[in-house]
Length: 151
Image (cartoon, rainbow, N blue to C red; front, side):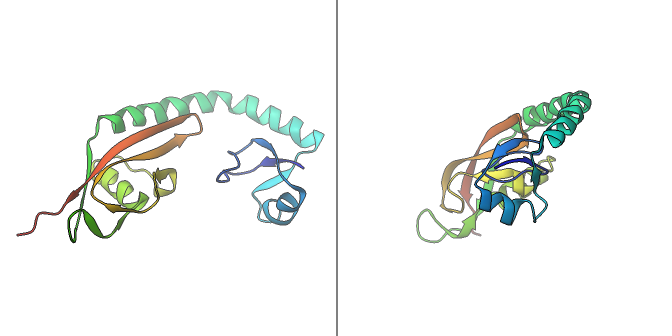
């Protein structure tokens, strides 16, 4: 079944992509939830016209996303966390912590666009987060988790 996505769907595609999914997934989940519409010939023509009109706006969005990506690449991200024995953390560090750290550095990015390698991190060390600023602007952000200094 071919469908046109109305919004980004994790592990499937981005807004306005035409994707092929199994009939049940499309008919019972994506279409009723409003994530997609059936890709009929008329819907494809409307999509092509919409994409043509949106190309100029898209170029500006990509330029802005690239500018933000360059600013983020300049940052050195260090997340301070409480530790127990050795390198083990109390709790964990995830995409929310990376988003908070970037916000403190002046770059507001929603945590849903940040994916931390391994999900929840429970040890000190160096890790990488993938930040998706636009469908064509994705960057890897190296960050380090360091121990909180006790008084």
